[in-house]
Length: 307
Image (tube, rainbow, N blue to C red):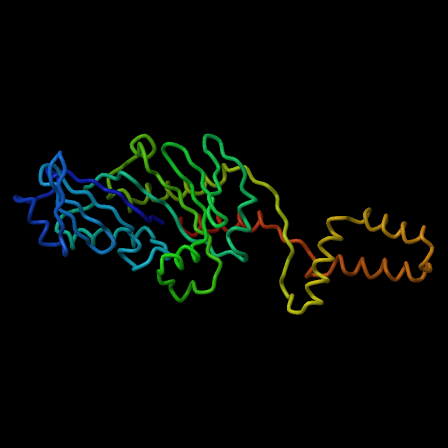
């Protein structure tokens, strides 16, 4: 359920006589300097590791990318523990003692339609600014936290990232809750080992859902495209959707206009009325509740992660 982490650990929590020993675990080390001193940087899987000899170590990276090789798959609590243990082994110190400076709680949700179709269902949220930066990305921002909804498949393609076979060709909505400031005010614990603590993990999953639930919702219907495989099917479905928007009263007005015109016979008008009634009730013409699907899928994801 976690993705990007930004971590810091002081040297007094790292059991090393010589801080420079950590460099033995990092390939392609670079040295940087500024007016405040110097530091060394390298990579450990997806994590950028910056070692400051005077005070500590910074780590920034995606935990699922480190563990799975991608961040489309979602870490369970047990996999989170295994990923942190592997990171600790590869770096040579206990990463669980580090302090979180940023934490992303996220997963991908398979939807029936492309993610951007659902954004109009999401309205305002108290103490957050709603910003739709692009067609595929929706943000809710404040100074401590950020919620993001985006099309994970399109984002992966844009970055030339490999999409695991089990997700290929699917509509993947990514919903992230990013804690990026004042974590001590927002989280009960900021020590990394808390990430796989059962109580903490369940709270983060619950909060992930609660943040979504607190967004004001807007009912949005869309045409159900199931079974549409010919131009005639498509035309019938479009007409049925328009008829449903008009409602029975609107259809009655149309028929009344035809009657007043006097061109069509009573039998012809009756046939038209019967055809329209049948078209309105066809499966392809029924409207599809996007909001209901979105709320159901987010709730099901929460429940699955809490098992």
